[in-house]
Image (cartoon, rainbow, N blue to C red; front, side, top):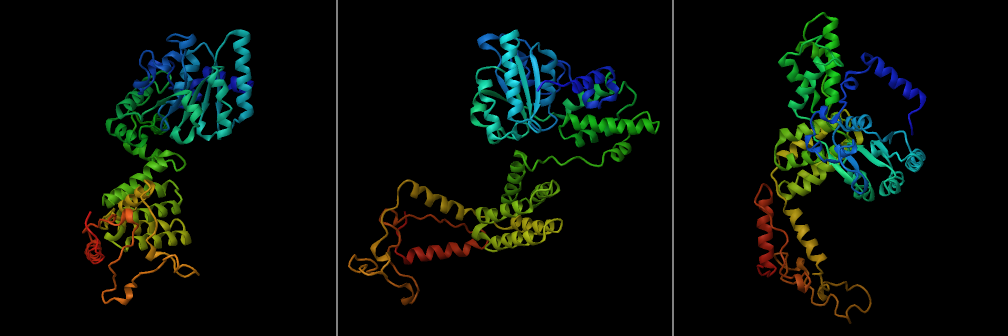
Length: 451
């Protein structure tokens, strides 16, 4: 929707009295040349350059774009720069508060502006991942027919959160986390600029280094922490921001983990891969990040149960019972005590001997089944309990293993097409060595020929 009178008045007051705005707002770049980082997106002829009028229009005009990146990397800033630099009509919506009704109103307004005044519309849609499939569908005709040029921003992986038709009609631009050098330049500008702190306070190197650690590549977080620490230093009458003042002002760095976004899957993946790699310390780090971010403990427990079979298997037969017990305990007690149980299970799994033999075995068997290597069940293994089964030859010739001294009968169990197939290849890691001996012995007594 177009900005209302109250929004316009607020923006006017902000321009007249910028000191009343947060430092992160005051230091927003006014042109693309002032943007910190993301230089891979700002080359001459890039979609963003063309959106602000640096390039051709008409049939080769700029496409709609989806900006994907972590918080604080400049998605909203880039849209703000476009709004200031372009001579196009600029409309902003947030997927948190807008719906199909608001989208249609913007599209109708864009068509009227194009037909009546020849003025194109840029629609900035923040947090597009919060739109449902139906809401995203409502954007398709406008994007496809270029009634609007869409700039959509998301912190979540668009391949999971944006519908395929919208993705195919837009350019996906990936924003990278800002480097320490990027943030250093931003902090120096904020300290000296007339819109910023105007050299009212200095930032020593040790304090700057800690501020960069707190920021974690997030420009907004860096400027917010700088503003708070600078205010505290000035209140104390200090000429510079000491490390102590910064630590007193900023409690801690926010954990970089979004349990509703793709970072949820990235950190979960890192936990499992650290367990697989037997790095108990890294595994505990990722577990702590998930717990501190409020992750559902049942989700963590489920991942641990999968890991126990996928990466440990029979190398430690106790791994799966430990993971299952942890899942049951977590369901019964919840946080905060569940953190102890998850730690117990994570340590046990990380330090257990590893084998993926069970994983590769079922994978190879499934691959053969999908290829059509199945065939009929051998007659002597078929069900012989129903009337007429004997006439069909079912269960005839079956040898009952318990009748033999060694408890194993040399007879064919697999279909003809697979009679010599061997899927399970045990390692000699940990307890699986015992199973390696057992499988060698049983295959020999089954009369199995090595493939």
